[in-house]
Image 1: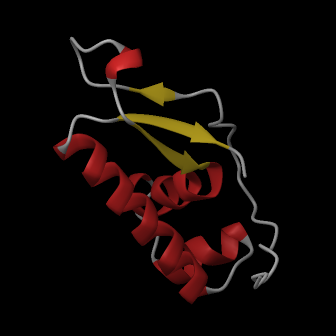
Image 2 (image 1 turned 90 degrees about the horizontal axis):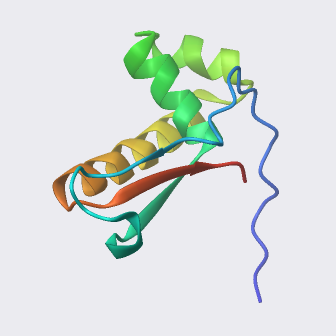
Image 3 (image 1 turned 135 degrees about the vertical axis):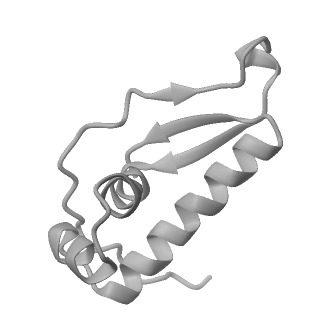
Length: 94
């Protein structure tokens, strides 16, 4: 069994862990759920909401630019999947 590298602590300025989004008119119990982790949500906040460049956003999170790029890309893919395929989004800590 291969064990990957330990995830480096990432600075997250807001607690997003109690947030959930779902499509209108469909009961939550009937929906497939996608988990977005707090660090992914923070990357979305910094890049898309705050409009920071990846280098500046990665510095704020205390991670490398390449790691930030992977985190934000993962979050965007999950959000697109949820929006296009009517899935609920749960935000959780790792």
